[in-house]
Length: 498
Image (cartoon, rainbow, N blue to C red; front, side, top):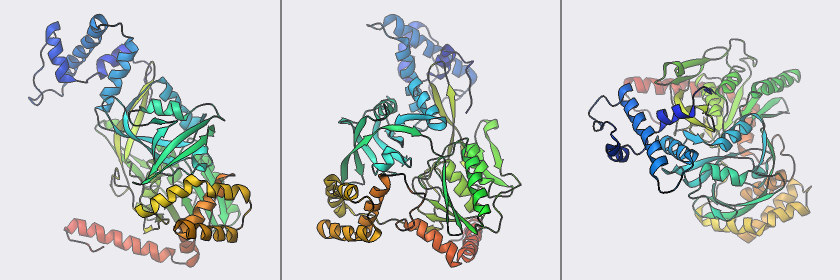
């Protein structure tokens, strides 16, 4: 994160307000601002053109202050112009952040706050900074949002009865965050058909980093987010695994929505002996560079590694997954990752600040995965529901029958869950495996989430089977061979069967 506190608000007004160009040119013909040449005539992307536009923008600001029918708070004009300018980039990750949002960002990356524990994205930003929908990128484990059953990809369509369509991100955060212990009700849309209300009780959200445990002689390390403490916590986990004689490792990056680039590189260095982890490319020379792993690795080359990813794995977690995959150090299991291959810097201003994309990042094989994602080597999906199942599932969720069952039977066994799932399957016509998972999820959400759930987590089951069954090295060799064939096909422009 870079800081530039020396830049004054006036300078930023002059530098950054570049909205409504055609309208501004017409308006300020009346106030003796030099007329600018038409777009596309050449020479517009020059320092002199930027200075002329900055002069026009400053004149607009002064003109509104002097001539608008009502007296206007200059901060309102300032924030509106900043919001419009950054939205004009068409990049959901480049946004103006009022003072409250800057505080929220600092809370999320470094501290704690009162809220529901969801990473969220604005869907289809409009020119005024409002959104068409609100998407959940990932829930934080052991938080109210996670316990309420909200999943990556869910849309929140209303908050306390007010539609999120037309809200700004600041408005969303002000409604979801608040005093711990207070309730907030959201309506969730999952897929095309399923909608249901969820009541969430706010809590103090402490930004988590890692969970770990041994599965027999397999070290299981879950990275929840990438903060300044993640590398140290991962080191502690691996140290414990070594002391207990681990033979292989599962690195779980599912629902890890990212964090600090430096932390991702540091984690990758635990597994890679030197070489490129990720490269960034930008039109700013200082932002184009290679990030290399340290030459002293912590995990021996002979330790097999399986990485778990899903659609909630984004940004920094994709850097780690991409580096380990491209460097032939790990086998990836799960589903395709989110696909965020952009680097942002945050710049504070006198009040608030802004976040702007300054570079794209590339995996060691020189691939930018933005809006593409990283595919797993072996795809394993949880049982899904069809549109025909959506209404049945919606009726089941709204009935609260699963929650009532878990509350009445907090220590129910796996056999008891299976029997209850069989009853629900007969009543609602839904897949029994899906119902067992819903019951177990509800069990987990009523207490501290377990480090892992091998009985119901089919992706984790597959990772364990690969490591226990002795197929890891053969799979890695097959993956390496396919990669070589793909590279040769690209070089020779030959089709490759898949």
